[in-house]
Image (tube, rainbow, N blue to C red):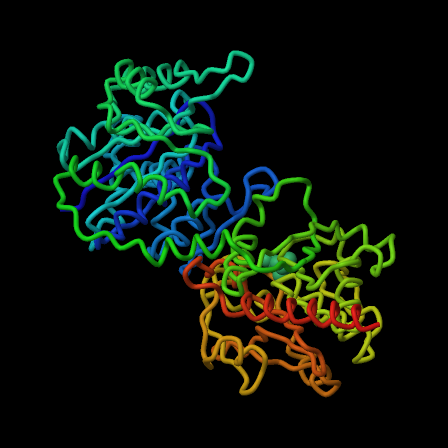
Length: 540
Ligand code: GLN
């Protein structure tokens, strides 16, 4: 029978519930248990696909094309779980389903209510991923006390009643702040937060206390007394400089064994050595490399979380620290690129939507092409690469994507599906995993070391097949194509050490123990560029 761990949060958001849940998943998996993680978001949007990434953070895309909360990215990076549509539920999605049923008359005239109808659907949602898993970790978004989160907390309370103490576990993440002026750690926010949980009938079994230092026995005893949580289950979730250290901080305090004991599962030989050595490598780089991200930022770096992690993973593979310079694309529309990009060893143009900053991104692309600076374009970045090539090499002045200039004379990217009436790609976006066939001897094939790969997409515009021949004739290398639709997925240019744009988002598949081949290859090339630059500098 599948067992459930419910992770709730208290005091304030952004304490790292997703990473805490992922870390527990990682530890349980290291004992050989089959686990998965699920996220429940109490907001009313059906999914985060249409939410502003600068407010909500990155939209993470799964193999099956779900647009989900960024925590699912952590789940996949920390564990071997492969998330799907069924791994992210919002109140909006649950209500949408209930209201559709209600309109069809499926409730047979009954009054449709939060309890039991909404809570029943939430409970069913947990079961959608239970198959073949020993343990499902369900993370409830928001903080205890939020009005919209109540049906979710009620549902997990009912699940304990239905499934029993040994099959369910309540883990609560809370804050123990250190007040500088008085030089004290404060337990009151934790006491209040647990009281709030207990008022709705949930007694936490384990507390993860987010704090900046290890909590001594005295303070843990105090928390234990006030919250009714056994002393050994009051765990310090100490701030660390590297998120991948968190499972190790938990393991040090025996969190995995506490969980297994409470759930009546036998501990097995824990295998953490690969993870430990990865963290060690990550924390002891031997050199560094400077990568410029040319985008639109509005301050929230969470909208590029998978991308940053993919760079970190690739850096670790080469024992390098990757320094990221966040460059506003619009800056390149006003200032000369050699100034803005001074000291940069590689340029990355990430995915994005809308025309603001496009010309700046294209400027950066031209600069990378002409100066033989490694260039990596993701999705919108690949579109910039092909448009730049069309304009400046193939002889199509004013070439563009119709997203940025609907009246361009040369439509290099356009809404191909609308024109073709291809329905089975779902909605207006191409979402999720698609096959990509690689060209022999291309940079892509050398990086992946295989000929067929599967990567995740999230975009509306496609390379216009009409321009495939003229761009190829002028030298552009089309090194990856989707065999089913014939769509262009990867472009490269000749006579350049590393210049590649891909229509998909490889960052969604990079893991700390399995860095993505394209990122790894790009960072390697950027470092080679840096070494060459330093060599030229010292010999001149
Ligand atoms: N805006 C572009 C499109 O929709 C690129 C999307 C992206 O970068 N994810 O095709």
